[in-house]
Image (tube, rainbow, N blue to C red):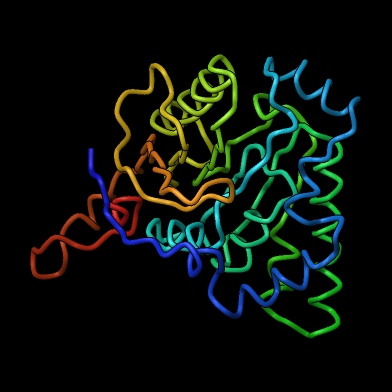
Amino acid sequence: LVCVEVMLVQGEDCEAPAPVQEVLQAVYAHPALSLESCTELEAVDARRVNQISGGQKAMTYGEMQPGSWSRLLADLHVGGDDTVYDLGSGRGRLVVQAALETGCRRAVGVELSKQRHQQAARAAKRLSRYAEKMAHARAAHAAEAVKFINGDMRQVELADATVVYLMNQDLPRKLNEQIWEVLVAESERRRSGDSPSATRRLVLLTLLGIRGAGEPSHILPSSQSWTDAVVNVNLYDLFTPPVPPDLELGPQGQDATVPSSEGAR
């Protein structure tokens, strides 16, 4: 278990790097896509979310601050070979930011609420329009990489996932455990070579520990929208692909540097 201590300044932590923040502000400038709007679910939608999830907190909503998400993405060295999943993605801001900031292969948001999913889909359209209007290459790539799914996170195929974020602050314990089981099963397929992603890592980020998951590999600090206090993020390293024998040693017999989730340690 590795704990990383970082001084967080709440005001600064509210923003992503300037080029990314500029696009995020443009995409989410509409009042219907505001953070506050995500707490205003229609009764039918809230009941459906609670019924399927087994919880009672459908109206509760919060997000990791952009600066913290940016730092985590950097700590994990997320890049062009990664596929980022946000399970419980709400209005989709973390998904859009990941695609903008890292150039990842895909960024996928999964949201059970129909209303919040519609917000995310609207944000994706605004991102595409922004990229076209401003001839913005980074936004154009992000618009192609982003995908939003309206459904139960337990039933989504995660075969291509490399980095999974589960904002599980208010999720029922059983749901947390079921997601863990899905990810463990995928990691075992990679370990046995039965997954198309057998050469790609798999890490999980959560706010709360999961029963049966053991100790996280790392604990990283974050700022969240609902509190001024530092909130720890647990990082579970489920699978790190083995180093091919010809890459284990450098040309002079020295250890070669192999990018992986080890960079976060």
